[in-house]
Image 1 (cartoon, each protein chain N blue to C red):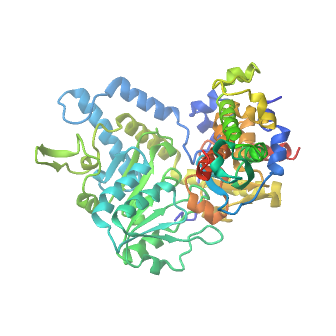
Image 2: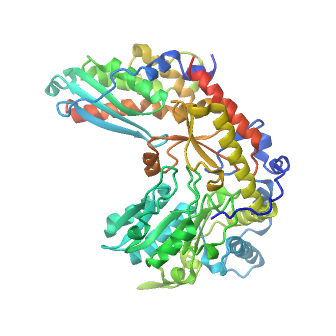
Image 3: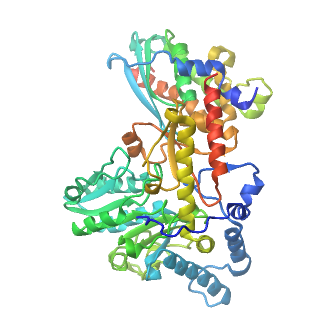
Length: 416
Length: 164
């Protein structure tokens, strides 16, 4: 889904970007290669949140005083920013949640509970994160529908050979736009077309995509999309569910409470209009302000430049690690850099990822060992865990070199 | 000695490279328990065979086997545990489990003092022999679960063997 770049975007000024991230100064020498788990935060985001609390904070909605209106404007302004950023025509299609996991659970518990039963099927892929697996398994236990899986090729691409048969009778497809383990981009539009042809809606897990490449939910044709602010320079505690208005309108509320009703009587309630219907309780207002600031920060840099920067680092990492370690390193995922994002899972010799990352830590290199909340994918790869390095706007080739040096040191350490 | 070298003592790496009592036992007569470390994806299976479960705490561990996969800390801990447990009574194994747990909950400051304190007051950590090499793990809190995985799984295998 990433189009080839015809004119090469202007390279990022990484040294200048790094100055925006206080943690990179406060922890000198830090080689942070774990942005796929959570990115670091620029001053612009931290300042926006602080400004909101220092000048504009009150609870939102339903108050007549100016301050409450300022807070409401901040929240709704953030909603408009998110809608514009992902190409949504209608800002009321943007629902703020706690994180992407809650966004997916919302779809499962609301749309799923209203639409899925015995004889129905939900289709997932072997690349999915547990957040797009377990909610469906929980619901399937209660409602007795079937879960089917799109398998992988040897190159960890989706194997679409049997796609039509897999989709036959399916009502929903849960699809990641980019694997959080291998970096594999999935053919979203092709699957959307096939799913819609089969009468299924598509929920896109866009957590690893939205922070790194220009995203247009309308052009992709998906029906739902979920992502989290904290992986895109925004704060923790806020995620987004975008959904097609007709679908969201037809769905029952998810969480109940204040803010999500038009009327409550002793014998029942009337839910509010979108998006309030899905936002029970006081929303994450400062976090929404932080998310909007993060979006503006990324837009100022340019999403096409960000994608080009990460593609360059990915190609550099694939080349330099392979040249340096040869057969001693196994890099999972597509072999072509343009088929993958800035995430790289690998195995080095027979050193367990937990041990490798411990040695890397002593060189201040932060990578993540483990199953990355994708155990079905681990079984496809035939491993219990991988070491995963991931890069973002504040990383450069020096960080990849530091990673390579530390990997080399770990080899020396474990062959004493 | 650096913290890293303290974590990866030579004896730990030796057990990791040449794990003792690797394999599987027939169930029954052996009991079997699985343990998972959700943090790192480690999986361990402990097979335990007693001479006569009806003897309770006096039953003897006649055989023990470990399978699964994991990091050097979890694998070496399992390997050392298998050697420490084989041939001992269920009562002795329970005491060893308590002693090991106590060592893994020692605070870093008392580690620094080199006293090897024993907050649970169960027994002398020196009884742990080779297993003392794992005491460096407590300086790395996220790795404690790696070291204790095999032991908690052994506790479950003991329960399933019906002797406790």
